[in-house]
Image (tube, rainbow, N blue to C red):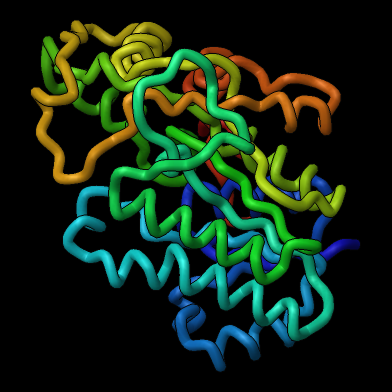
Length: 296
């Protein structure tokens, strides 16, 4: 039975999905979060990694509050660059263990007509994007033969509130909601992401990988689809990004190309509307043992 250590597995959207999928696929799983100790304490981190002695460490811990990162760059850098770099150095010193580290579409920016590939030049325009790119580089520089970086985007799924949940909550309170129409990305189901990531771990994949559901969408497209699937009563009013002032700049187009992942898996990731339908219609939530429950 392979053994996994999931950082952020108790509370994070990605970590909870990973814990669920790993257990279903026969892995022994341990989680590590702030409730267990400070992951930025290097002595504690080294002791825990040594004791667990995992076959694969999944790092789903990150500073993800994009706008707040603009005013807290040092704190964001600690979680997004220092921590993954430390994980890579400790695993290198231990001489065993594979590292799967999660990154983001925010490493890209600017207008574009085709999805971004792994070998395209990144150009982040926010503190969040720059610190995540620094984390990618730290991992792959220190542990190139035993680490892979998984870039993903626009996550929704059980276990933690996402954009989809926020939109549906607004729709229950208002007749009309305003949603940005001129930013395009890759909506992604957390349980699909977890499944692909475990497949990468089982194959000891290395390097950069893009892992998102198929097709691109604007935030308005995603909101409209979620509302339609739940027969929501409200109307979506499109607005430009500059009408919704935010401290951090967002990529104008950040759809990710998954050709590399598709070749490895032997099939393309399913389209995001299909994944969204499964999430919304099944009513699933993650139980305390990492399994899935239907509606009660």
